[in-house]
Image 1 (tube, rainbow, N blue to C red):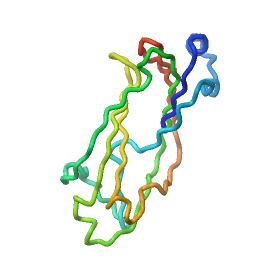
Image 2: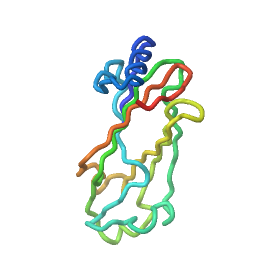
Image 3: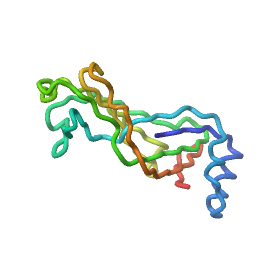
Image 4: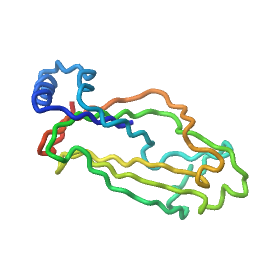
Length: 165
């Protein structure tokens, strides 16, 4: 999950200083304008249909599935930002479908987002995805069974410099 908060310059400077001093309470970073959560698995997630992992040894793309791709830059418009990235373990979801349809790779749709946080050599790159089977006719891969999580926080200044805090 990706959460993006717009900060004013004063808060940015204070949070960066607190981080450098080892005194930053990460919950305080959730104070700016929240631009909403972007929730998606990292590419390429495991695809489970009828209890069987479809892409266990090979990727869907190597099997011939086509992916549309979108490049998204966030936090690069002269403002100050706090960005929270939560990473979970587990699986995103599974569906049940007729076996005869499962092997037809044209039934899979992949949308990849290449997210760039900040600018330049210290920017952070994430690759998120959304995979569907037959446009959701047999359900979506959204019955999460996720556990454990790691949280990474970044501050981005008005020049697009990224600081891991």
